[in-house]
Image (cartoon, rainbow, N blue to C red):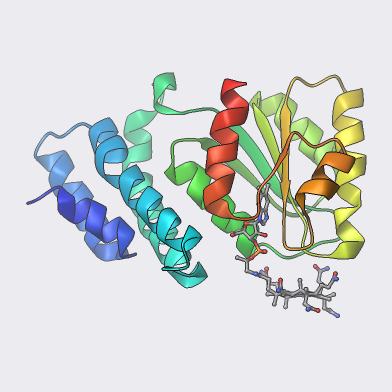
Length: 208
Ligand code: B12
């Protein structure tokens, strides 16, 4: 077994292969953290970079994220209790009135794949639910997604409610109609246009 097969399987979005190599590597006594940091995250980083340069597309990202998730599902139980294993905790959801979740799930998978602990609340999420989850989960970041011009305005309400509740949490926003200027105007801490950049942004917000 070559561990580079794991990198290749994630990069090429091959779920069965990723799962098989992960199981073989564990049986051979390789540490989960080594598999994640040295092979799996590198595979996700490469597919993300190819996407940024127009050399890979959304389906490729989804396939890689799926393969990554398959391997991570095997490794996750082995990481429990090891706080150094995660970069931070993120609560993510699509805002109230909005049922689009493909992009949000992609962002969630990428964040999870790149080392964050992610609590995915789903779609049609009201401000109170974001606040409750962020408080209960002791989240470092709240991520909101909106795909409709009629629902993106609700993000402002959530941000105001979060600030009013006094939570010490960073807020990231995204979705097709959202842009940097809008994000700034509603008081978000960050915006990114795609899942790969969302990981970079989340890492920088955690360090800030
Ligand atoms: C698929 C789709 C649907 C599916 C959703 C299925 C699902 N499970 O998600 C269905 C069929 C259910 C649907 C329904 C509707 N839709 Co629709 N839908 C789309 C479509 C075609 C693709 C969206 C998508 O998945 N894109 C692919 C993903 C990967 O991209 P993404 O979501 O933008 O996410 C990326 C980034 O935005 C970013 N990102 C996303 N979220 C976040 C969050 C954070 C924190 C960060 C940092 C980044 C980030 O990263 C992602 C990955 O790179 C868009 C068209 C479009 N161009 O967007 C219309 C679109 C969004 N829909 C539209 C409309 C009008 C509707 C309906 C109102 C239609 C109707 N009359 O019933 C309903 C609304 C239902 C509701 N209440 O939500 C309009 C919105 C127009 C507007 N100005 O508001 C669009 C733009 C189509 C159009 N051109 O008219 N829709």
